[in-house]
Image (tube, rainbow, N blue to C red; front, side, top):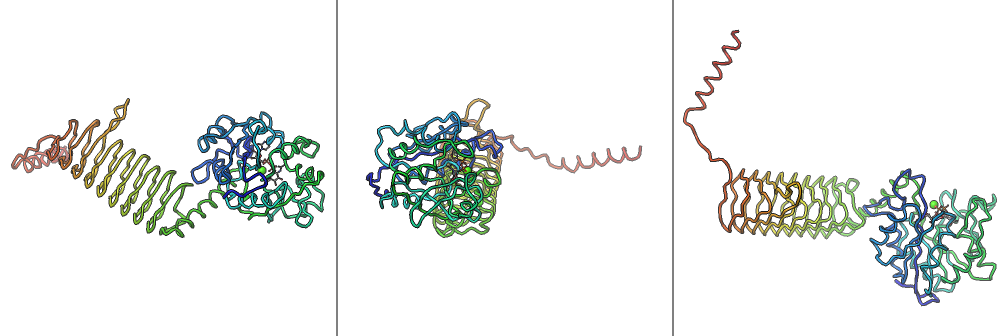
Length: 458
Ligand code: UD1
Ligand code: CA
């Protein structure tokens, strides 16, 4: 992936994420709003990280601590740089100068609110540097150029970038626009940025001014163009929802082309990391939260909500199942309707076919969890585990009060409240004993009928 630039393909990535995102009208920093279950910041970082950067700097400002923590969650080595006051993209990049001290190689600037740039596009920018261009800007043909900066080209050469607010009528007619991504030798970039002023319509230090300055020094500047869909930036919640729709459309397509059947794709919701094996079938209305992996041939019936779980080959889950996290379902299992699970290792061939809550539990191979079984894992203070051995049978409507261990092959009678461990192959019955009173029902009926008659006479 690493394009060989004159610097040997060594990259530093600078992510700009200091802006407030006023139009989101949110207490949360803009770049932490999510698309496909991951902050847009991660989407932006992930594609640039395909360059295998030697350094990754993230410029933060509004909500700095939260943004920094999120960046480190994805890239633990991320260098966090603070921009106290948002004085423009050029000013923001300068905040990363300290983080790149001693670094020799190329720097590439990306925006934290532009989540759809692809690794392939970054590779093409790298290739343009490798091809000898001193400064490379990533542009696109805009359907509606509007507020975007315009790329002023003469032939193949990029002469300058002019912001819409500073542009002449003639410049505004240009439809080739700036995405925001700029790459150059790191030392060259910071040297040029040192010469940028805020003498413009917005009184900001524009990153884009480095192009004109570079040309003034006789450096070679080039534009690499990508599809407009990749450069989509997010400024408000309408655009956020549009970005989500784009993400979902791509994820559905990728899943289907990858060999999964989606019965009603428009209603299947994916996360950034959902993985479906071959011949997986997904019924309508399912939500894949983060961290879901479904093995070959498994079937997810309609209206399931799955998060942080692995589902083994050939298993059937749902309809209406809820796997809440930390769940490992083995091969050929059956998880039926209205079953909720959390933090469970569920052995091959085991079944929980109806109406159960199984939490903090290990369930052995081939065990059967009857309808209405509840693991009582929480006493109001601590969570406790339930271990159910292979081949055990838990009768319907049982309450398993943890901590509890039920041995392999054991049998729990329906309606039991089990508070003590059950040994291997034992039968546990923990419920009131049944007593039959011959003829009592008929006598009861007579008495009640007589009482009713008296009442209606009065
Ligand atoms: C920028 C480009 C414009 C391009 C457009 C593409 C400049 C001067 N203009 O304009 O040519 O067409 O993006 O979307 O670069 N940021 C900071 N600190 C700041 C200012 C911005 O970190 O002081 C960050 C923002 O959080 C955001 C990114 O930089 O992630 C872009 O800033 P924004 O104000 O949205 O730039 P535009 O005006 O859209
Ligand atoms: Ca913007």
